[in-house]
Image (tube, rainbow, N blue to C red; front, side):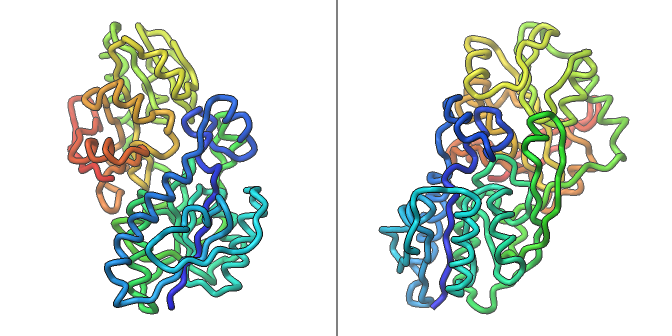
Length: 375
């Protein structure tokens, strides 16, 4: 019998669309801004894919899912097409202590893998309990997800978990970084990242994401030049929405405007018309307006949409128009991606499918490269 433990952080990711850079310590504020839970839906998508891949193979493997109680996993697990065991207890709370307690109980029950839905904070809490004694696998549910313990999408997480079960004792593993960003510092525009350790994860180069990496200095001149070019070519009749990051900050710097480093800003007619915008403010701002979205690429991961910029929701992206998305990145950053793909994980599988294919990336003035986009 192969047993996988399931933990869901039901509040993970709630701060994303409302522009809070995370959810730690600001759940009530997120709710006041209109945030709704996203973790259950994303965990459900992963479990559906896990079930699909395992139920057809039941003659080959005996499998049991051991889930934390209630909305931390048990509610979602019940009714699946495989054996379920739900941990006792659970009072409805979802603190870091509850996550650690569930991880400790799953380790005591000797599950072969902890399958969890959350973000970097959830990964850190679980790692602090199991360290490198037990493999873990993350369903990407948080806002940032800089750690390398996550699959690139909920569906890919389900497939990686199924492959782990089917491989049994011979399942290949590797070490992956567990990192987290200080969310209070992020809300003040500072990036302070700490490495907590290296967890064991299933080896799957195509469906697991890499850790976020800093860009090297090799592209400075070309990147600055293309950002200057983008700033100079802005149509004063359009609203320009700029995603987070240092690359888009360069664009606004060439207009003499400030940029929210980890937020979404907007420019119209050479003026800053919105700073650190959430989904609701973005929709109000671009209502009835022609708009263009300018986004960068997350180094190491290749993430284009769905990591740290959830304010760019499926509704916002459709309102802007997928044909009006401009991508800018340093060539060295792109060449360092392995596999050499850009990634999208917007929360809407249908939209992700529309975004896949190939897209031009501006790397220098009058120079583009074409990169594959995958979900």
